[in-house]
Image (cartoon, rainbow, N blue to C red):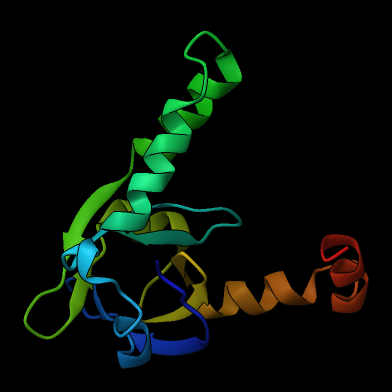
Length: 146
């Protein structure tokens, strides 16, 4: 089971490759087999799942009804841009151009641990996201952690 946490800012090279922080690499279980699935996230970020955690996501997706139009749309939107990526010898993941454009990731990327997944953000967009929240951290915590 993965348990990613923390926040880091790293460079993205011209080929769309980004290194994962050593602290996060240590959290990748051997079952992931250095393979990750990268797909569209929410709020214009990317989700990066180790392969073993991705299996749990697929199980949830399989439980959705193919007869429900909302379920079909979500599955298509979530899976259509999804790609498999493996570490290269320098522990970099390659992010396809289409996904980099979706998240507006260019020279730098904010890498955020979110338990079972890693989120990749344009650093400026992440700061804007945080500053545009209408409720305080304490208010949200009170609602969520009941």
